[in-house]
Length: 226
Image 1 (cartoon, rainbow, N blue to C red):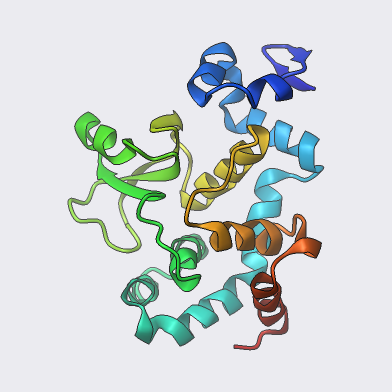
Image 2 (cartoon, rainbow, N blue to C red):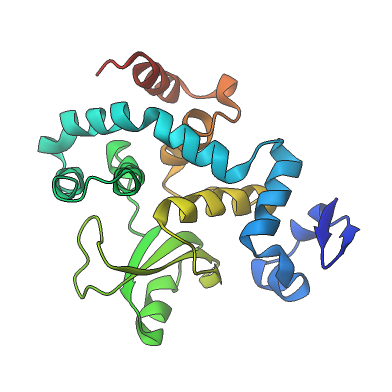
């Protein structure tokens, strides 16, 4: 059961039959960090931000090492790692790892990670046609591979922003994973391998059934071999 607006109701079968806009209209309290974390805990028996961020941090040094070995063959990965030369905080390292993961997995995140300036028209254009995604609102006209001046991070579902004012990009990813579980939404199209790594390697959920590729990557991360 999911607690919404002070009372518990059986939402899951109904939610899966509705579009996101209808769910948001009927149960607006569902679309908050707190409620998403509570529902994730109910479904997975794990703390959402802790399982995501601690898992990411556990693999961060070795994952970035794998990126380093690939950077000469991928300009985006090179730009992300280059950005860390001047801003090497743990938060930036987390963001670089997440933004670089689709490229490392040889997938295209162009319809998943969206950038825009902080205007209504820019936001509307950025989210249009995006089924599942993360919007990064920046104060930069031409955002860098790793944006420095982030004004907002938001979650996109069915071409609409459903949750915004998230603290940073890693939090945005964690909240998105919670929403996908809570609403039983498929992973973004074209990013199957990326999200398998996030779920089964980073968050260690269902890792016993991961693909051979993901299993091999997990072994490299755990053993520290490149």
